[in-house]
Amino acid sequence: MWILYVSIGLIVIAIGMLAVSLMKTVKTTRPIVNEMNHTVASIQSSMDKISSEATQLQETQGEIQGDIEYKKTAINHMVQEAKRTPEIMKEFVKNMKK
Image (cartoon, rainbow, N blue to C red; front, top):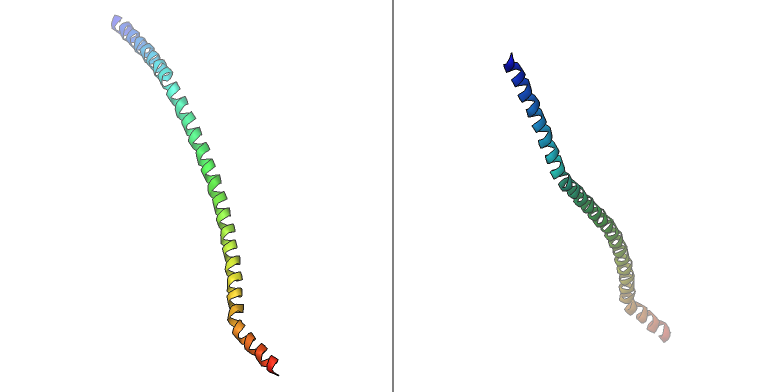
């Protein structure tokens, strides 16, 4: 019968030691977990900022492409008009001779 009491006592002591060990582990890991959470929050903030800047960059790229298309059209129009200049000059000279 005394073996039963000793066994129960050992189990109680083991559970107590387990609880103490768990408390020490929690106390040790809590600052590490808090630091990791802070780091993750900082990284998330940086990712949000990068995403915002990427969106702004895409908008600027679209504006630049639109501006390039506008200027390309204007230059093409100018070149076409310059190509017509000899014909216009010939007609002008022809009309002046009349």
